[in-house]
Length: 181
Image (tube, rainbow, N blue to C red; front, side):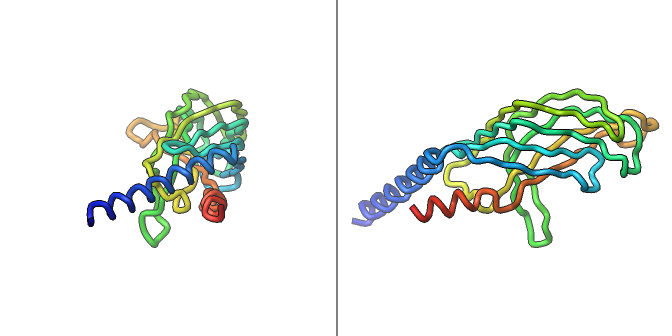
C-alpha cells in the first residue's frame, strides 16, 4: 500500500512539473532588457532580446547588445574583450553574494577596445541548461564578459571579468502565471 501511495504522489509531482514547463513554453518567448551602463565596471553592456523557458533549458536570443568601455575606470589602456556568455545566478548567502550556477556556451568576441569606445553586437543565441524542477524564482540572468588588459606591465594581473544582471525577479512572472493557471 505504501509503495502504491509513493508511486501515486511521484506521478502527480512529475506530471505537475511537466505541465508547468509546457505552459511556460506555450506562453512563448518573453522579452528581456538589462544594462550595466553607469556601473563601476570598466567594460559595460546593455542587452536586449527574448528568452524561452523549456523543460531542461532556457533559450536566449539576444537581438542586440552594446559593449562600452568606461572612461571612469583607473585602468585607461586597451582591453581585449575575449567573450560574453549568458548564465543564471543564484544567491549563496544573506550578504548578497552570488555565483553563476549554470551558463550557455560563450560568444567569442576577440575585440580590442579603448575607453569611450562602443561596439554593437547582434543576433546571438545560446541555450542555458537547467536541472529538472529548478526553482527559477530564485535565479536571474547574468552576462559575464571576460576582459584582458593589454597595456599593463608584466607581472600584473591581466585577466578580469565584468557582469551585467537582470532583475532578480525576472522569472517570477513566469512562476506566478504558471501557478495561477
